[in-house]
Length: 479
Image (cartoon, rainbow, N blue to C red):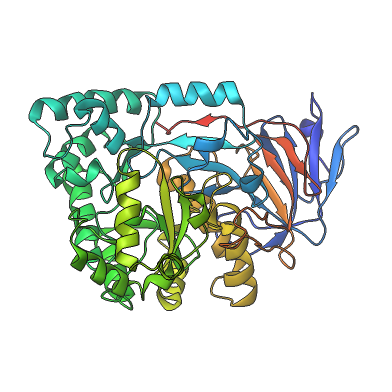
């Protein structure tokens, strides 16, 4: 029986009969969830109130909305505010500003989100690489001066005041590539109310050195540190997962991972060297990933006919060597134009260990309409492949790593749990049917199995279809 005190002044929604997985890691249980406005107001053995909308969920999992710990969806949100590739995965919050990216102050990014009003929420990091570019312009191939670092710190402090989650970096990319550790430490100290997250300097041969640099920055900056899209991306470090996990546990680090053995980036990321005319660096780079047949061009504006082909295939059809093809791609896009590659370079056995570890959350590292399938398939892939099929994780542990763990790590207040008083970001999905369908050749294919999604209490997806309602909002760091 419902107490009289629960009689509500405005219409409410009752999600009835579902299997509740609350995000805490606790075992699933049968329970109903009542939403009023943007909040969860009751959980338990509830009966329908007069005038209340009932969402039948028998046979479905009811859980918090998924938090994509490393997302590039913000770049396409103005063109596609429905974010269907994210919403159909159950993602209700995307964490943006990653890899050191920054094109304008976080306050302006948040204002743009409010103007666009997308279907999903966005939280933001302030990006070191963009701050560096803003201050140093094209003269960035050197260590920053004290005065330049001070100017970066001023920009970062404004971002933190605006609600940024902390500082991100992309030290494998220009212009962050040319920074030294001390520069990052000085900035990290400004972000110490939040955290530091990094696409580290090297995800291949020198990955351990790069992870240790991240740990040092966290320690000296007095803030938590997280490894972005953690991977061991070359033969030299394959099967070294135990060493990485020991470092994570010893130094109290966190990480995020996507469930694929192939990464996507610029072709320059194949090697940490910038001596691109030196053939020897590419001999090693291709050997490290198993050969030119494992490097597939996913974007190339100077010659779109090459897109979708491997470097080995392009070399064969043009009668040139794979190394000359790589050098041409770099030369023709160095000043303008775009290029990217999908590279199969990781071991499934290493990936499984990262997926299983309790201090490693999940991310897509994906974009809207991107050329890597992670953008449309990450979260259903985890639930179908690693939970339902391989039983690497229980459903409650997988959902904890998708919800409360990132919410707590990033300081997202009142999110990540199905709990009275919390924001009603809620997903209803079929564990027996959820599946990813995106592939390298069809990267935009949408996932299936997510039936209903509520964002800030608004029924954004119903029966697998968009409702047309868009309730996404900026999310600020809890202070």
